[in-house]
Image (tube, rainbow, N blue to C red; front, side, top):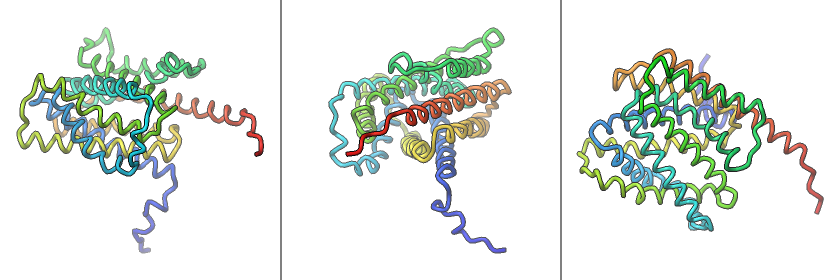
Length: 308
């Protein structure tokens, strides 16, 4: 029986399947981005790598932002956008430093704690309510991080703590985005992040500045492009399906990272890294599922709008 390529056109795929494919593409992109950061940071200071990632990422984002027109400039929360850019910069610097010191697989596994931190921060800063089951899932997720770190069995390195600090700051950034989206469009939030990060990241980079070689410049340009495309794929994944359908595929980041870590740096994640990552991702999926259930219950309980 002959098979035509038209059978596999994206239009023929259901939304959850397309969302899953976008997530897989995002995972591959993030793994490649982290591997490039690890490689370039061996010869360039992570502060400078951060600046070039922001610069070339901004250039790569221009076509996406241009579609929104001048309306993306409208905001009455400019100082919150500045605060978010500074927060994102510190998180990125810590993440890049962590990647330069930590095996790719372990760093990737620990980064899965970001949604767990976000759940806690949503309660603290946004006043969201989290019931016992979600608190339990969150604690189990953090136990997964302890499985990876194994304090008391292995020395808890500063590099691993830097990665966890980066994950917590990324979560703070997510909470700030939630707050900004109450009044600004998603295009506006992205615009100000991209265009504020570059000048802000230049300041610390100047203190360690070293003109990159042509080879380093190639990797830095590639870093900016891949990072931008990975974030676009990530956004499309969550736009195409519920988080409960998409989040399980985030675990694919670990096999990608493990493969690149082995090929490029001869690193092999140990069994505890895989087990801990599975516990963290499983907890995150459960939390997302509970949030989805609570949203549906709230929507069904809301009184219908009066007819006009």
